[in-house]
Structure formats: C-alpha cells, structure tokens
Image (cartoon, rainbow, N blue to C red; front, side, top):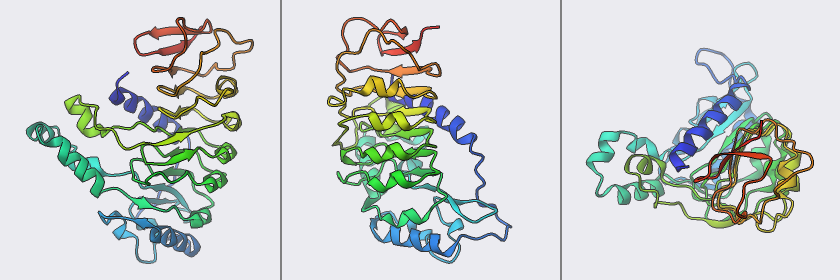
Length: 308
C-alpha cells in the first residue's frame, strides 16, 4: 500500500474519530476568550520552541483562542485543540506548480520543509491545558528528543499525532494512561507527501532517530483506540505485541509495517479484534503463511481483514 493511500485512510479514520467529539471551536462574535492561565501556558511553551518560519507570530495578545493552531470551546474558553502540524505543503499544494518545477522540486521541497519546521523543547507548561482533546505535532524537527512522559497526563485527549517529528528513544509507557484516546500516530517513517503524491517519488523521507518500544503492555489500556500507526518503530523487543493488540476492542485501522516483528502466531485462542478493518504488516518477517484468524485481501502489501 503506497504512503499516499495510507494517508487518505488515516485521514478518513481520524475524521470519523474526531467527528464524534463534536469540537466546539472558537466562533467569531462570541464573548468567550481563553483563560489567562492557559494563555500563559502557551506562551511558556512557545519560549522553548525554535520557529524559523514565524508560524507562531500570531501568538500574542490577550485572546489565545484567536491564535493560529489553537481552538477553544466557545462556551468555556478552554483550549481543546493544539495543531502545530508542519504547514510546509501549503506552498506546494498546487499540482500545476509541482509539475512545472518537477526537476528541482525535491531540493525546493526539502528546503521549504526545513524552513517551516518547529524544533526545540516541549515545555510541561502544556499540562495547564487540562481540557485538551486534540494534539498534533506532526512533521516537525525535534532532533531525537524523547516523547515527553507528561503527554500521558492529558486525560481528555482523543487525538495524538507525533508522526515524522524526529522523536527518538523509547516510547513512554505513560501513553497508556490516555484512556480516551482514539487516534494515535507514531509513524517513524514519513515522506514529504505533497511532492511524493504527485511525482511518485517516495525517497524523500524525513530523518529518523530510532524510536522504539520495549513492551506494548501499556497499549492494552487504550480501550477507545480506533487508529494506531507505528510504522518503522522497532518492536523487536515487544514480545507481547500481539497479545496487547488483541486487547484493543475498538481498533479499526492498525499499521505495523517495517517494525521488525517476530513470527506471528498462526492462531489465537480468543480473538478480540472484531472491530478491525485493516491491518498492515508489510516489511516484517512473519513466516510463509497468513494467520488463520485473518482473511487476506492483498497479499502483495500485507493488508488483512478479520475472518467473517
């Protein structure tokens, strides 16, 4: 399955998941503004970041609900969504632009990506955003720092996207405390999608810093999880990976390609994956045959569905 198709699938699942949350974003004309302690928390967070493209230049003034990437509940004023996904693709969103500059597009795209990257440290001041439901830090340049353990303290979080952001080291078990989470993307093998989707060149991968897990037992506590992407995370030490995933009653889309998985069990005593729609296990050494508890849809890309 190509990354562009995967992206559309991820977007669809994420949209369904987010849609059930009924976000109440800030609406102009209301009298509700953000709370001062949350505004100050965001400013403290900003101080630890490097922002060469000045994406966060709007982060000034009294009403943080008007800042770029921030959405607030229009009744309470609490920040409920923080979206700092790299906006590098906006400049190159035009198909005509990409086709016209096809020969020098790769260099332009990589340079633009680096200029639009946010890097630095993630300040725990974010914990003041006690009503945060959506956090997207994808496609940034955090240079191998670890995923902060305190992210596991957002007890209302339903969406977490850290895809392609240059995190390294062990994935913290504290993420297992996110009992309301329904979308988790830890993809460690990301492409410059706008360029790749038009040219078909998927060689422009973002830097990877060896993100890995030693156990997936924490994953079994995410009872609301519907979408999970762990592409290219090293799961070779996670002997409990299948058992942990089998304890996810709501999982619908599961992406585990290129994860150094050991041989998969051909049978399970109790299959608890009744909600699973798609499963990508490509690029792993799983043995010659598909598990008996799965129906193969496309052997060439290891997309499976649960037996009906």
